[in-house]
Length: 456
Image (cartoon, rainbow, N blue to C red; front, side, top):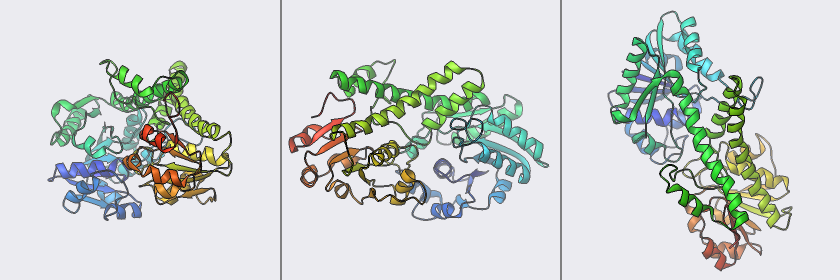
């Protein structure tokens, strides 16, 4: 068997590396027209940072795992073709700001139709709106001369920072297909691949539409929990309650559970906001405005939490940060990843720059040029945005310190040394509730944290 993956991004690269590592008899080829990205996958400096990924790639690369730019050749040789291309939110036309932009999905389908011959199983791995498989099948069957196709939905449920563990021991593998003899056969073929290392009782099969919709709904439910606890964090601050104690108390209820009840400055990443907005658009499209408004409120609450955090910094620093140095620790949307998509840090840094602050950012994994591009835009310069090479450098001479990513290294900094180098009073705003508040208060810091009763 030969597997081809179209797209060498965050989903395609790690997923195919794991399949190749677990199935040494299957030839796995990841293709992408981006030569620089493919070169990176073939180097010691992978384009995706994920704990454990290097080891998995090295175990199979050159044996049965290949990274190439020959898209058409890989399509011709592949028995199963995974489509792992981007599906960003549309920025133009009908559905702008909400609907998924499916141009890369359509382009992939047309390329497959043009060059594929014989029986092919096409696997949707990208996050797409329900009924996309129908469009793909229409394009494939209308444009192919010598190919026959079955389209399966196999959404990814990877959490950045733990993707390798998620791939090795997934909660579930979901595979949806047409409920026809041909569709059932295609489903069974893909089930057999995953069953090499995933217990059969964790492999779920469904119809196409249920599988496609499940990905959006899963992310919407997770994001909803975060927005819910963040809304309560504001109430905790106003009433003297402690959001962590509240989260623990309700999390012990077996009907609720403890996961995704960690208050913070807000959620980010490539999926949550994009998928909720896609769900909002679909609900509106199918004439369900009340449902659309309900899910849109999850995104509004997330935006409000980020703005509230920024406003608290300004308000606490005597209602002005103009000309003041604010050290921002962390720029990735969460620890153990270099992904900055929809990171809360982008919003907070922009808000502080609008208040004429000098913002000094440090992140252990995000390159300086990416930080500048995310905040300012490509080719734009602003002398008030500085990227430091260490947390200590960022904090030196700062009026305030804001933690926006929960990197473990931030918990054990030399806070006495940092305090000595900051302007007084030295303010700390913990947007992830990871710092040793009491110890820092004894040093002289004035510490504010999400959902905590008051400064320590």
